[in-house]
Amino acid sequence: MKSKNPKGPIAKLILGLTGVLWLAGCYGPSALDLDYGNAVRNNLAQSVLDPAAGMKTTPATGLSPTAASNEKELYDKDFKGEEKKPPEMKVSY
Image (cartoon, helix red, strand yellow):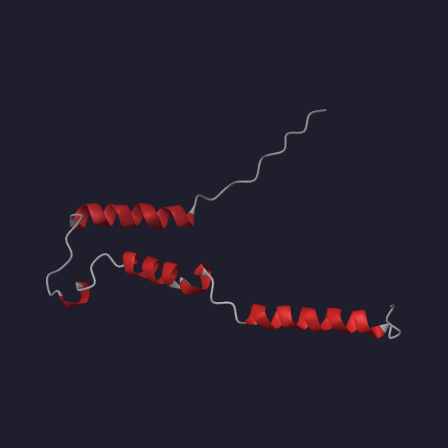
């Protein structure tokens, strides 16, 4: 026997989809959700070479003062650049 109510199958479909969506909301967190932010925290921790560097009273060692001065001059020279002359135009008749 056919259903006389044409809204019956549509109502069942809507009710079924609502139930599926409700169950999908109960689904647990994914692996990405559980690991959220750990990559950033790991990269920050690895970017610190020496966490106790601020507590040391000894000066940093490295280049000699003369070598450091020469490096600084080269560094500054790179930003100044050389003055470029405009190309000369030669006119021939």
